Length: 267
Image (cartoon, rainbow, N blue to C red):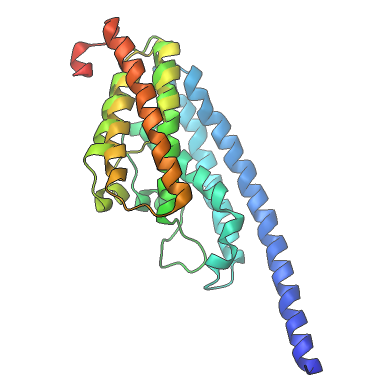
């Protein structure tokens, strides 16, 4: 091999090392912002329903900071090399997707679409060769949402919000039951933290929250059943949703048995 060729290869290796270190530093900052945001969102399990809105006021600036971190990472990625470097931030990005979905759900009760999540995080989409939110990132975020809502449904009852579990139940059921692949990716509500939230909602005395979570999660589950999931990790996470749904249903059953929520909500 000629000396000039060796020098060229060494130059390429040096550039890769430099790029990797820069990306690593930006990803670490992204992780810090995301962890802080997740910490604030976890407070929903001990927060009465009428205090959720002020809590979200503190989350939105954090989402903007995360979008800034994503932009910083994207600026470091050489054009058309997204797939080469994406492993460095995939898990953190999925956490940010979940946080975006949960924030929208807490604010409006709607499921934010994949496109909507990308807009909130200021990610251009598939046309961007440096940064994108893949379908798998969005679906992982949805599953995490269902997990969180199932816990919230329980804690809401503890807080005295007896209708919350019912609304959560309805929300999840509708989401799982009625979505085609297109509607799943472009729908207007979210799902993965719900089972955890359903539980904690009861603990907090929010007895209607688990019902709303239950409907939401079951609808989302039905949408997932229409997808041909070949990714092993995503498939395993999807299978775990059955346990979240069962957890929420148990909460809703207890709430209805004790007549703690409006019968109309349960129906």
